[in-house]
Length: 320
Ligand SMILES: NC(=O)c1ccc[n+]([C@@H]2O[C@H](COP(=O)([O-])OP(=O)(O)OC[C@H]3O[C@@H](n4cnc5c(N)ncnc54)[C@H](O)[C@@H]3O)[C@@H](O)[C@H]2O)c1
Image 1: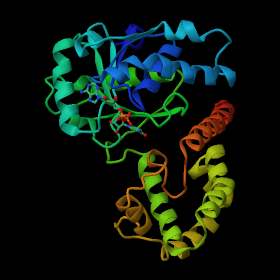
Image 2 (image 1 turned 60 degrees about the vertical axis):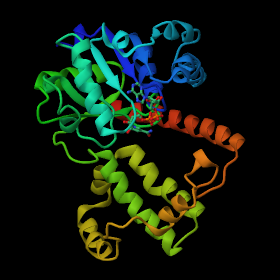
Image 3 (image 1 turned 180 degrees about the vertical axis):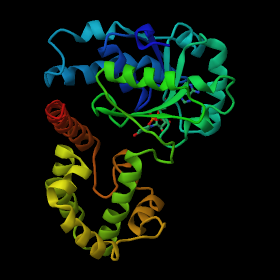
Image 4 (image 1 turned 120 degrees about the vertical axis):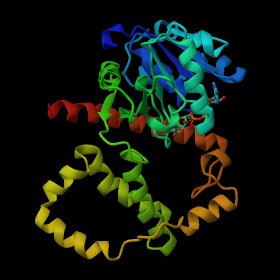
């Protein structure tokens, strides 16, 4: 299907990710049919998206008065079949359960038109596996968003072994058209691209924390104010070019011998989980939170993310 043929889209699963993904499409001008198997998720969708949109309006990402027009494009429906029947492009953001996703993709084939593209937002399952029960897996693709998906620009587009080139090109272009920075991943590997790099960094950061090399606050500040800002500005490979590859070879050889290299979960991370401290969702992780502080910190975090998104688009334009 040509990208211009996409007129109507559908989002299944309206939780943390799904509601923001639906919002992206509505902001870009598409009618979005939305379904979640839980009534509360359906009933609360419009208000959750409204809150996000008001934040975007305040940050001048949206013109004043656009919120209601955007919300009018969101159609919450009460069955899966109704959600996907008219859709040219379906995105699922349901639970991270392989069997649930496999059965969903197989079931959707009966309800959608032959050319409809089916995209999964799975964080971990390759689309080849998710689409394994489908008769036409060439229409299935992975589009991996990052939380919060209505703010973070990048979406990884990962075709599977059986995804057609047409599906991949159309999906990639469609996501570019709706304003995302769609990145085509050429090889279907676990963790795709971003989560692999992130996990490599987490391993070292948690190890430093385990060793007591610095406090949690100091680790966060050190990375934010050095590596973090450089990564946001130019990206990890270009940072190397600016540093000088000759210097990099020397430091890499020296450092790599001292880096954590095993596959165990870092001690403190496991301990916090064993104690039931999962982070903001339980009120305690590495730091302590109250429900008020979570609200305030989330709003503050999103403001910072939005400021970075503005900078990201500036630097992306500079590079063109
Ligand atoms: N949370 C993240 O940071 C993140 C980032 C990238 C990708 N993902 C992926 O996105 C997907 C959704 O994650 P989430 O964090 O939004 O989860 P979530 O639990 O917040 O939301 C999932 C929603 O899907 C609904 N649901 C479950 N099964 C369903 C079905 N069969 N049909 C319709 N609705 C169904 C649930 O009721 C729930 O509202 C997962 O595959 C996850 O791996 C999550």
